[in-house]
Length: 419
Image 1: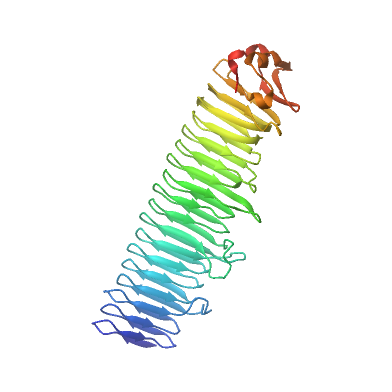
Image 2: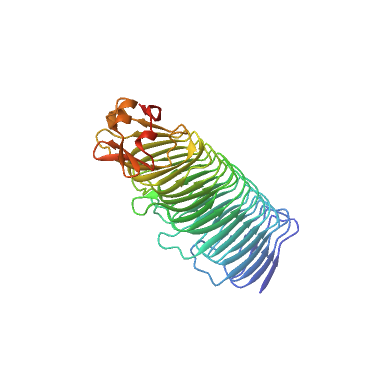
């Protein structure tokens, strides 16, 4: 084992051997190169050292390198060795390969690009950046990341010449205190972060996302090969946004003013949504909405195509706009519910049931005259007829709106509007 010590003034070229080395640098601005073996290296306290410790993809996974970055502003490039890297200060730039790596980085503004190994990365302060290199096949390893502070970013990258597909990477991320950006690829991913104003791109595959404490945005991704994203978003705080293409989407929580906007050719619209708070908005376009949607405590707006989901409204002043319907159910536990019945005149189908409709609580059915054929509220009331214990309003193309448990006499002109 070689022992290599640099001059106290720094600014030295320190060259290791092909064997196992101990290298200690002093001063600052040193160039440290080691061609192989398992090494222990301490950089200078003054920082700004450059370390060249192999090449990404070199296959040297049997070697281990223990690195102490004592100063700030260092640049480390390594191969496929198994690295354990500890930094005491920030502003380091680290690029390492496909070994199983452990990084513990204090200070701010650390930048890391890491390979396909089983990795663990912990950032002590904010404005950190991590790129996890993914596969274009099944990912078998997982990178675990812990952020602190604000302004952090994560993304999945590639070192292959294929740029039109997302790589596959399994990732678990915790921590962070807001203003973060997290962009995933294929594979499984888990994110539980804190703070406000975080932005998340789910990528393709299963996800478990807790995007922060409010004012957060989650973009759901899709592809022609794999369809939409599938997973759970757990919300905290207010003014959160979820948009994109959902194959199977579960949303929980939030304290109001949540906006969910989904759709797209590859979206199945399978929902399990239970929102908190008021003034929530849910829109799903192009494909039928299925599953269950609990809209919160009032002042909600829901706009769905081909609804077959079960919708629950509470509080007051909720609005449901149904552009055709295919066997859905509305559970009306609210006051002043407005249900808009609309769609395309050339392609209109409508089968919907309202349970506990608040005919005496200000409930209104707004009928689009262009698609329903009704031109006045009186005409709609006249068309109501009993079916067992229910009341039915017939609609074109053998459609119907069913008021479960109500007799026709419970509904009046003021329960209908023509639009």
